[in-house]
Image 1 (cartoon, one colour):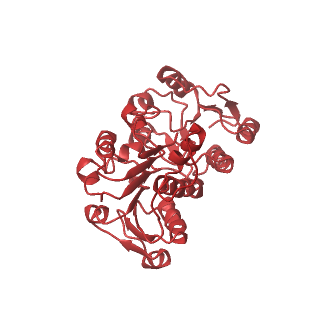
Image 2 (image 1 turned 90 degrees about the vertical axis):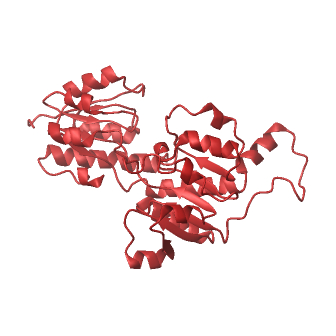
Image 3 (image 1 turned 120 degrees about the vertical axis):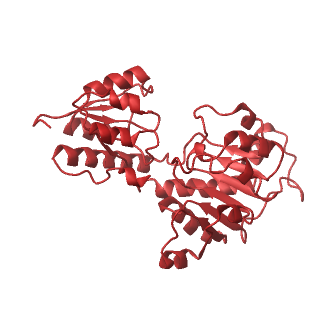
Length: 328
């Protein structure tokens, strides 16, 4: 790196405090319109920049990375997941990839619980009923949902977010169960009062609520496929605040339409921002626009992590949030 300020190109509009600090520290080019970069614009930015700050909406595949200019040495992603970046291709090209882990844990866990409550207690349907002007007052059988206290919650992916969900769920009186590629340390298990299931199929068939909190990796693509969705009990609900690709959306639509299980809460979609039109017609699903991490505090924390990663790299040190291939 040269002693002059490096050229940092940011692909989306970030919170003002983050952009201001980046302008102070680096030769920063911002995206004031917040219009997502086209593939051609991404390629141009990667040929010119020394540091690229993309988001989850930027798909940096092997071809784009291979076409990057010789000055691009760091991709400091604004986000926790890196499934939008071909990390092995970046490593081959000599480009370091960083992300912003840990800062969205509490926000995403909050949204997971919100979806569990929204689906179980039919909150969206109730709100629509009031707005429609058709509500005729309280009645013994009006808008009946299901109690979550005393139910079994099965968490798929017991990392930071999964554990934060478990802590909240215990406060609601839920029994905690989980499936993870690695079993938690016994002390953490005991603290969460969590039951480990090595066999995902066995857990799915016994839970009242399923929460998807695992990352999107080749191993988790369509982890909940048609066969596994069929294992859910008729009264069960499923919420996903992770990545849309973890659930086979076509199979999910069919299962919801057939009432194979009671309902779902989705903050992510397999082909977002496109949403399957058939999902929009289902009354037993709550749909949100990927807003699980959308808090002012969380976004600023993400930006500060990006700045730390970039500044550390510019100063000639190892960025603290470097993504390694073994993370996959």
